[in-house]
Length: 113
Image 1 (cartoon, rainbow, N blue to C red):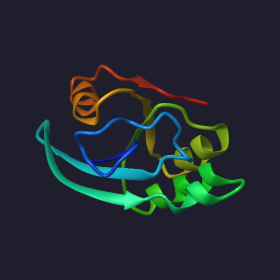
Image 2 (tube, one colour; image 1 turned 180 degrees about the vertical axis):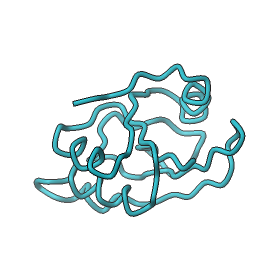
Image 3 (cartoon, rainbow, N blue to C red; image 1 turned 60 degrees about the horizontal axis):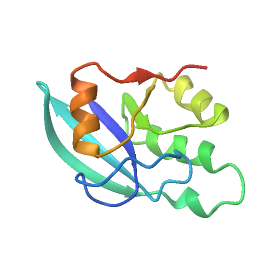
């Protein structure tokens, strides 16, 4: 399973960014057998947009073929775009590695419309 996490920096040891559309980076993580596999960092070019950043960011993440997004907060239009791609969205905060473990342990709250 591939997960996208809104991130403040380019490191899995960093923190989850609170705002989905305005995060500087997305960290794409493969979860295999309950373990963290390959990771990839994608720069969020949408951060510079004056409007529609969440929608653009949602499209960027959907292009990565992820099944799950973890973020602090997400706007309704971005959430709608992700829902159209059947991407589940969960709320998470703190260190990315700890948030991933919470996801694996099924401890994160799902964000729904």
